[in-house]
Amino acid sequence: MVMAKRRFIQAINDAMFEEMERDPRIILFGEDVEISMFGDTKGLRDHFGPDRVRDTPICEALLTGMAVGMAAAGWRPVLHMMFSNFMYTGFDAIANQMSKLHLMTGGQMKLPITVMAGFGGGRSTAAQHSDCPYPLFMNLGGINVAVPSNAGDAKGLFKTAVRSNDPAIFLEPGGRGGELGEVPEGEHLVSFGKAAIRREGRDVTIVAIGAMVKLADQAAKTLAANGVEAEIIDPRTLVPLDEETILASIAKTRRLVIVDEARDRCSAASQIAAVAADRGFDFLKAPVKRVTVPNVCMPYAPALERSVYPNSERIVSTVLALVSNQEAI
Image (cartoon, helix red, strand yellow):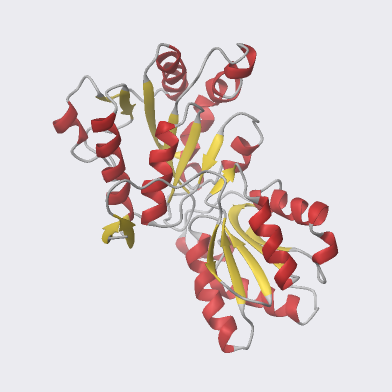
């Protein structure tokens, strides 16, 4: 397989170009997609024209409803919401239409919608631009949720989302757009529901989501210097969730730490911990631990943001306490 170095945002941009060339039914619209504030939609309007790439007013409730209507009429809309917090104001159509109409029409209506946005903290974008709302979407029951951690997966997961006949939320980890990564050249899709083992280990399983994979890798190197070998699992999609890969890893390491930048209460980490307790209890020889954000709004001040945001030091201390059978701090 031939690999190319591409930045995270460039990989998404490549995927958009390729998919819009492949399928004329794909329409991209949203806030500032023409000027491309993030860079992921750069050049698309010039190439495909205003009929297929449209800026919209700042009216998220209208945008999500438009996406549902377009999909019902046979188009394959890609809706860019910029920041994932903005999905809250468009949540009615997401929760009551996108996630439910396939069931409510007895399978007659397909909704091939991809809603994309940046998410997460670490950039001092304050409380209304720094949330990780994927637990909300995980709970809806009818929407896939993809959270890539690197450029190659960003391209492959985006293409899979766009080609699916089911609605999908595609979330770009905030502040990661400029990072270089290896992307397979040519046709590249990443299956939903298939986790990746980023690092193999024998002593503890670390399940890390999105931008947390990089922090987990940093922590794993420090842990290795202390004689602890961590296995890192990247779920890639939270819906569907690859429970089998996580459970197989727990069966090997007997310990589990979950790193999630959502708030702790009702987080993706909470669900993964529940799966481990329900299906992997016999494997575990220590309590499941979560490294998450406290149940507070994300502060604007960089120093305060750093105090609540997960970091490699917290992961290391949690793992070391777990391995020594002490309560993690």
